[in-house]
Image 1 (spheres, rainbow, N blue to C red):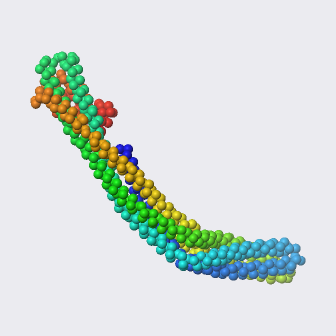
Image 2: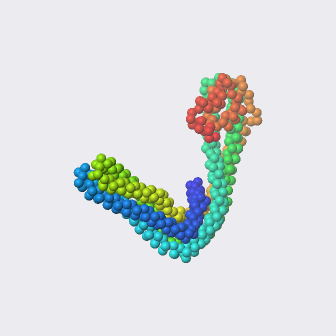
Image 3: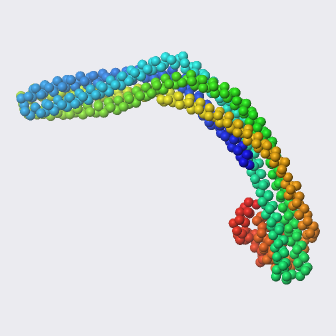
Length: 536
C-alpha cells in the first residue's frame, strides 16, 4: 500500500504538470505576447500622433497664457499710474500699494502657470524623440520575432495535446487502481471479521459449558441438556458455515484484485514509456527554440518597456499639470476679482472727491476693463484643459503591457513551460521507479497469498465437524425457553454483526420477556459494538 500510494502521488504530480488550465494559460500568455508585439508598430505610431496632438494642445494653451501675461503687464502699468496719480491724496496711498501687490501676486501665478506648461512641453519633446528612434527598429525586427514566438506556441500546444491524451489514459487506469484499492481494503476486513466470529463460536461453547455446570443447567434433566447441546451445535455450525462462505468470497476478491494490479501496472509503465518519448528530445527541442525566440524578443521588450515608461510618465505628468493649472486658474480668477472690486471701490471714492478724483477714476476704470480680460483668457484655458487631459490619456501605453508587462509575460510563459517540463521529467522517473517496485511486490505477493489453503480449508473442516456433531435435525427446545433465557441473552450479547444475530434468531427464536428486540439490544450495547455494527 505504501508503494502504491507513492505511485498514485507520482501520477497526480504528472497530471498536475499537464493540467489543461495551466497549459492553456501558458499558451494564452504567449499568444497575448505575440499579439502585443505584432501591434507595436501601429500602437507606436498612434502614440506618436497622440504626442503631436498633446504638444499642439499645449501650444494653444500657451497662447492664452501669453495673453494673460500681457494683460498683467498692462495692469501693473495702470497700478503704477494709480499710485503716481493718487500720490497727493493720502487716502489712496495705501490702497495703490495694495492693488499693486495683488497684481504682482497675479503675475507670479501666471508665470508659474507658464512654467508648468514649459515643463510639460519638454517632457513631450523628449518622449516624441525617444519614440521616433524606437519605432524605426520595429518594422524590421518585430514581424520575425512575433512569427517565431507564434510557431513556438503552436509546437507547445501540440506537445501538450499529445501528452494530455496519454495523461488521461494514465488517469483512467489510476482511478481504476484507486477503486480497486478501496475494494481490497474493504475485503481485507474479512480477516478481522472472521477472527471475531471464531471467538464468538468459542465463547458460545464456553458459555454453554458454564451454563450446564451452573445452577440453571443443573435444573435440566439429561434429555433437556442433550437437546440444548444439539441446538447450540446447530447454532455454531450455522455461524461457522456462514463465516466460511464469507471468508472464501472476500479472500478470493482480495487475491483477484491484487493480481489485477499487475496488469494495471504494466499498462501504466507502457504509457510512462510513451510519455517519456514524447517529453524527451521533442521537449528539449521546443524549449531551446522557445528560449532562442525569447532571447531575440528581449531587446524589443526592453525598448517597449522604456517607451511605455516614458509615455506613462508624460501621461501622469500631464494629468498632474492639468490639476495644477486648474488650481492656478482659480488663483488668477481670485486676483482678478480682488482687482475688480478694489478698482470699483476706488471709483466710488473718486466720485466723492469731485475734480481731484477724476484722473484716478479714469485709470481705475481701465484697471477693471483689463482685469476682465483675465477672465476671457482663463475661460479659454479652462475649456482647453479637458482636451489636454484627453490627449494625455491617448499618450499612455497603447498596448496592454505596462512597464515591464511584455517582459513579465514572456518570463512567466517560459517559466511555466520550463517548470512543467522539469516536473514532468522528474515525476516520470519517480513513476517508473514506483511502477517497477509495485510490479515486483505484486509478483511476490501473489506467490504468498493463499488464504484458502492456509485458513479457508481449516475453517471448512471445522464447519464440517460441527455439522456432523449437530446432525440433520434441530431439537425442539421451545419448552426450555424460560430456563435457557440467561444463556440465550449471554450468547446473543457476544455478536457484533447483524448477520450473526439473524442466524441466531433463525436457530433460537426470541422470547419477548427474556430477549430484548434487536433495536433494544443495540441501545444496550457499548460504543465498540455500535462501531462494529456500522462497519460490518
